[in-house]
Length: 231
Image (tube, rainbow, N blue to C red):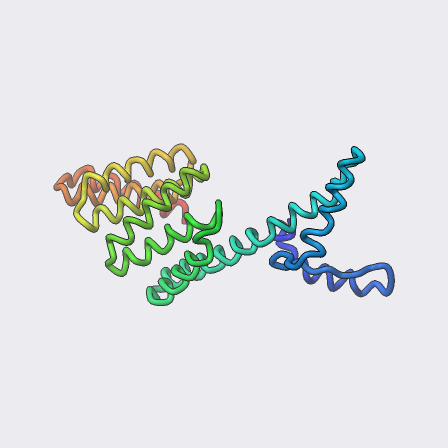
C-alpha cells in the first residue's frame, strides 16, 4: 500500500518512533528466517483448532511473511528492468544487456513471478539490437507465453510487436505481419494509442518492403500525425 501511495514507509516509521513511549518500530524486510516467528506460532494455531478456535491473526501474519520474499524479488526485477530500459534508450547496449541479464537471473526459477515475462521481453529487445536474433526470438516467445498465461494483454501486445519487428529484421515478412496484426488488434481493444502506433509503423515498413508504397505511406503518416497529437 505504501508503494502504491508513494509513501516512504521508513520515513513514517522513523517519525512514529519519535514518540517517547508506547511505540516500537518494526521495519519491513525481505522475509523472515529462523524458527521462532515463521514456524512456532503455527503450533499454537494447530493446537487451537482442536478446541474449535480460529487464530486468524497468526495465519494472516504467516501469509504476509511467506509472500514477502516474492514481493522483494519482483521489486528488484522491476528496478533492474527499468535500468535496462533506461540504458537501452540512452544507447548503452552493453549496460542494458548487463541489467537485463541480472533482472532475468533474479526472477528465473521463482514460481509465478510477475516480473519474468517483462525481464524476457526487455532483454529480448537488447539482444535483438545487438544482432542475436535467435536468442531474441526465444526470449520474445517466452515473454508472450508468460504474458498470455498471466492475462497481461498489454504485455502480450508488446511481445507480439517485438516479434513483428524481429521478423522484419530477419526477413520473415509473413510472421512479422501476423505478429504485427495481432499486436494491433490487442492495442486497439485496449485503447492504447502509443502501442498501436508502433504496430502501424512496423506494418507500414513491411508494406514498403513489399513494394506497396501507397499503403505504407498511409500507415506511417497516420502514425506520425497521431504521435504529434499525443506530444
